Length: 272
Image (cartoon, rainbow, N blue to C red; front, side, top):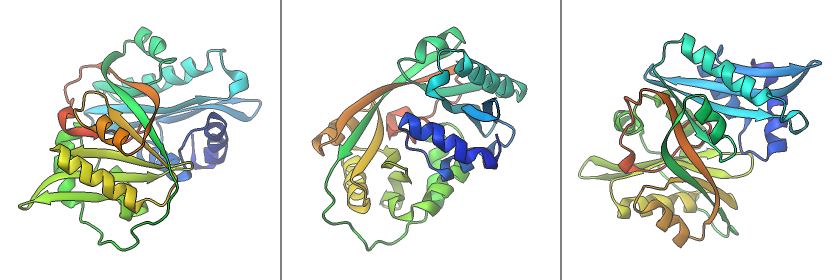
């Protein structure tokens, strides 16, 4: 896949009702120019898959989508196997992805194991007023902490998010110590909150409230970890409704699992 393929990739994701943008595809191709793939038929792109490596510790597979009229013909499996083959060639010990219920049986057959469950929650609202004044925060201190929580360095990706949506890059501190942070992506359909990290329920709640006050979108997505003690409770209290289940899966040794007990919500199924 190259940058010139992005318009056709957007056509596929729009048909699937996904939330990604040109910026998301650009992040993938920029980070992994040889690790993003398309399937063509008579010159038309009918499927995609994408990979991204995090510090050589583990890699991520995302953006696996196939044109509806070509589904059921093994194209998705071929695209997945191409991504796996590429990552195997890079000698990265672990691969991860977020599986839909439909995709989980295939991933299990290919050696992926369940790590934990994720729930997508969505908020439909009428936006009456947004916080237009804010002071941009420095996210440099977040990078070291996020490496431990996520399990690998993704500072380039987080910087990209903060540059695109500085009003949604949020930070909580106490006594000079970072106690929580969150970012947001400006999707084609909705603003997506994540990653959302907090050391206490109070911190998690303040970050959620601030995100909702900063976002101007009527539709908000957040992918909460089911094992987190307060994330789902908080979004439900703000009027979010359950949308779908995803399963975080991994293949290989899971030597850098991170600190999931501090993770309220992931960045999303695209990036982990």
